[in-house]
Length: 66
Image (cartoon, rainbow, N blue to C red; front, side):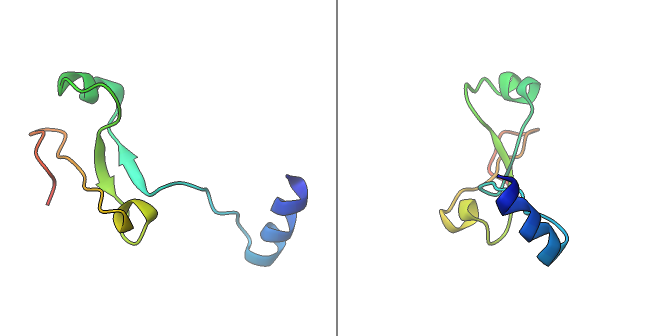
């Protein structure tokens, strides 16, 4: 692992954090909406999640975010 991280730090000054590009609601909000699993509240533009067509939900209303 160090052999991959150190050269990246030297080249770019940081190492990207892997992820699919979502922001998930916390457990309390998810439970309040009556959902078991993950509630996506935001999708990062140009991320794998956005390219797959995922959409976020407004955690207050439970409706799709626009």
